[in-house]
Length: 119
Ligand code: AMP
Image: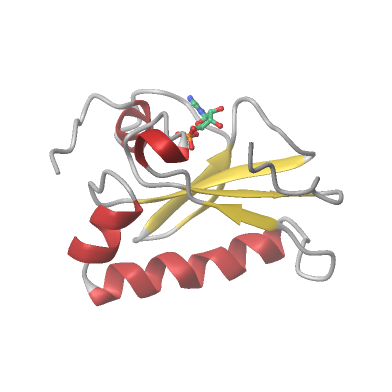
């Protein structure tokens, strides 16, 4: 799996493109989605160069994987969604509808999410 360092999230990580940061630590950056689909819509990305969830699950260190998932709970707290709930989505590759080839988790909430769309 070849990582393309010209992708937009790589540029955000390098500080070449601005973002509305929600949370940052040594493992992740979380920022608001530029085209929100729900009242709360943010993206969590690992700081390492991983194309998608498969690449991350296979090649990230245990420390990076734990760091990523520990950050999710902190971000949910920051966005005040721990009581009401939220939806987490990893779009992966072509069939998953992934547009940006740097692994990311969408966190959506702020109101009840619609039913899952299958077709
Ligand atoms: P995906 O289809 O899962 O790859 O989602 C990519 C997401 O990145 C979309 O929801 C876009 O709205 C979002 N996005 C693209 N460019 C930016 C940007 N510069 N800042 C924040 N979000 C972005």
